[in-house]
Amino acid sequence: SQQGEEDPQALSIQEGENATMNCSYKTSINNLQWYRQNSGRGLVHLILIRSNEREKHSGRLRVTLDTSKKSSSLLITASRAADTASYFCATPLTGTASKLTFGTGTRLQVTL
Amino acid sequence: DAGITQSPRHKVTETGTPVTLRCHQTENHRYMYWYRQDPGHGLRLIHYSYGVKDTDKGEVSDGYSVSRSKTEDFLLTLESATSSQTSVYFCAISDYSGRSGANVLTFGAGSRLTVL
Image 1 (cartoon, each protein chain N blue to C red):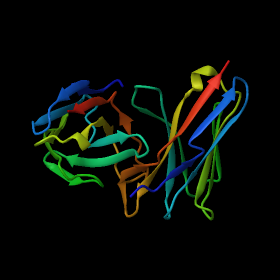
Image 2: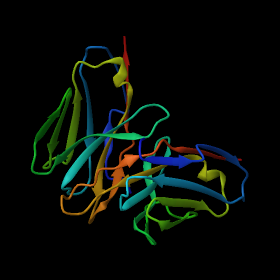
Image 3: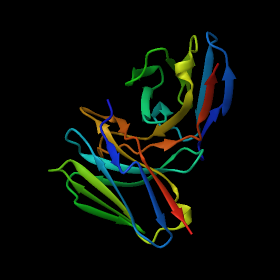
């Protein structure tokens, strides 16, 4: 069964605004990843945060992890039209880090 | 998608016919995966491989088989395709070693399969 669940399912913002999407998961994890998928393409790894980290930055991306609430958030600052994509969180399946399970994704639309 | 290619990229077939999707990598990565992506379900793991001739089931393996006779190739076979197997199939690779505890996947471009 899927471990992660993203919220909201869809998000529409204007260029320059910040976009925040959330991921909740069910069982304890040692890391959580975020991936982006442009329409008609494969997923691309964005950022990984480990269970002993609370926040991580990469360019315009900021990821937080709250293990007590079993949730993570991805913030994209100063969004651009090129950020239009679906975003997925991914976590290891319980007991086996070699398998990743993905949520259903947040579809982000950034308009000019 | 550099280093990982999927073929065919698009296929239309009829119910009951066998179908084989191929994933080829040039990265010499140990792990290879097959996922399917459907609206409302996200990505679901079908099968994966952790070495030549070493494979294991994922969460939606019924109706699928896999083979890995070489490090670079991972084949997904639908022995008798059904309409419920209409989907987009993604192959992924990883050099996960277990030491770092993190498994980062690199995905192919996907294979869109339609079963009529």
